Image (tube, rainbow, N blue to C red; front, side, top):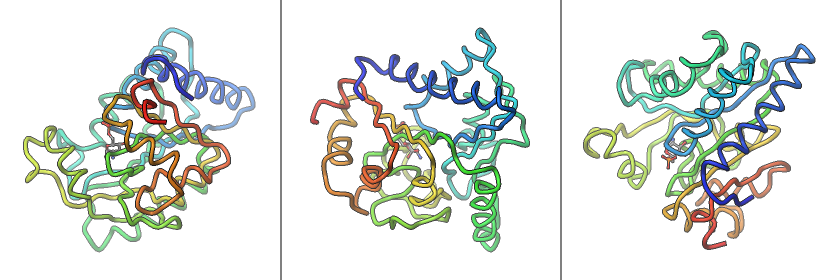
Length: 244
Ligand code: GLP
């Protein structure tokens, strides 16, 4: 789906979430959202906050699972996705704190495997992800599933690609400050979602977006596995769609 500008794309995805949440609220059911960080979903979060404040969108029954977090990193660190999600979205809506799940960058190394297994179980116990929001990294990653991440990968600790660390360098005041590791939901965890919206905006996403959509599905570009998903939509602005 190509929309003229990223603002229209953010509104489109926000409306889809709004429809699902309202329908499930009316049925007395919770909605499970898989959430992403990065500059791409900022407009979506802004629109959802507006819908909450001005149109009565009630998120009290929404359960969220974030894709990833740098490791190791304290929650209060200015670069943590924990902090980013609260400042950008959670602090402005009525999602209950006990319904928010984000991979934990503060674990001891020997706690990580158990944490990841429990994270997967919590997603299942919540009923599975209804709508998964994704961005795409320059390496073609979804979450932090860098090239080489298998189709059957689950939530786990990963090593970040050097391109990903370069792209994060500005935010961290230098590549040497970007963590080497992260905890991320896996390709299979993402593919289990009932509906997926991958958003990509801007000309710097055009080359990787083309490969993710047109190249055969491959571990080298984990976003390409979404071609095999029954209900995945790439939501692009014209710049990101330029090479299709
Ligand atoms: C990071 C995040 C990804 C995100 C990517 C692209 O690597 N872990 O989830 O998709 O950055 O970021 P941006 O949206 O800022 O281009």
